Image (cartoon, rainbow, N blue to C red):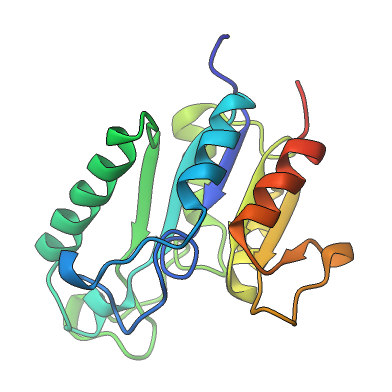
Length: 185
């Protein structure tokens, strides 16, 4: 099968790994149950895989870019060990109010702005209306909508999910939905 121009966009903290305070060390990184299955399903459907993540911990001075890069390389290796290639990872290290020094500024890349998604579109030649975004925060969903991503899915807390609004409690539920509802083309 030829590579698809459609993508599954994934937020990192809260979707790929459990949300903890500013994860930047391997020993603190725990994959969310079902992330490998969701990504495998997306690949089986011909979707590219793209990570888009705000990294305010860099802006706040909690950890340097090198720690983020080391953790990202380790994360990508874990996917590769399972035969899953992540096509691209985009991150925004800036914060408009809590950033320190060079990291304190507005950025079109910082979600809810669509910058990272639009860069992925341009870099990879992606069809955004045919793509899907999975995030755990309203800012993720807003970024996807603003960029023109066709389907924006929220990973919500158990008991708060509303499938009619494309909100699910587990990644397994999202994978099942994706298998049924993924745009074709």
